[in-house]
Length: 347
Image (cartoon, rainbow, N blue to C red; front, side):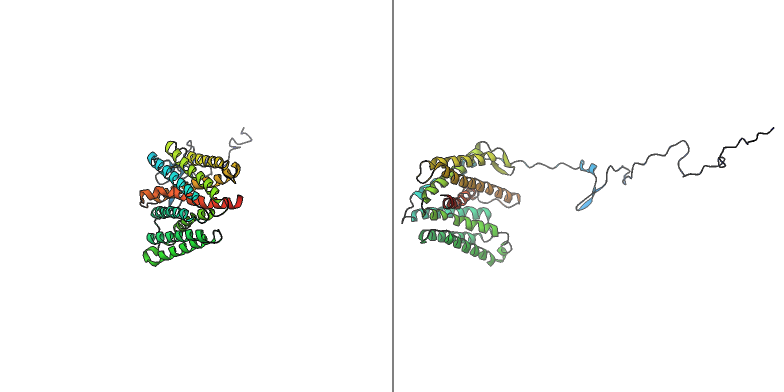
């Protein structure tokens, strides 16, 4: 008898033929997994490309193939130079303090001559270091503005800063006009506006000491402030000669320890003087000494940064003496109006 069901029952009708489905590799060989696109050389990409400015995309694994950047070695600190600058700052402070003691009612010309000599040093150092266009014109105009400011500070009926402001404005305008005369200098006049303004304003700032000597407590304030300034600059430079650490920048041969120690010892010196001078207390003297000493050491440090920036920009180095006189002169130039402001506002 034949079975009631066929032996092929339960089998798919298409079992005799090829099973439908997507085309693939031969039976028994599983398809290889896809790992992602490859580049032109057959190497797998490990991550997406990143766009970079001015060139083709760069992968993260390419960064390790680049050569490491060379580190710039720090500028060495020359100990004899630091000691020389410290001595110059001390002599400048002593000269200004002793000159202030010669000032009195009707006898301010000797102090004015001392101030004018310092102003000429300032003009020489800063014009040779910054080298603005029409250098000779800027130097002559700055010297003329210094003479006018000194004369106005001595002969004005009321001791004030208004005549000095007029002298500084006139000197700046004349300096810019002198640079506009020549076509060669006219191209750089826009870049030199800041340097011209710094030279003219800085040289006129010394005349505020003459005005300060004409007001009550002015001579005592000059003694306290300029002594603190001289001590601060002296200590800062001496510390740089011994321990210029930590370095503030590899290109600047100055250390933070000198800046901090100079400002602190300058303040301490002013407080000691305030306990002996009439019209001062240790607290008031320490306050004015802190402002002037801190201002002076920061100005001196800023001059070092400016010089390093000029050298990194490829500008040729200037006169050796002028470069290193620039810092102490700039510190005293900024300390003079600070002393006037502290004396008028807080004393």
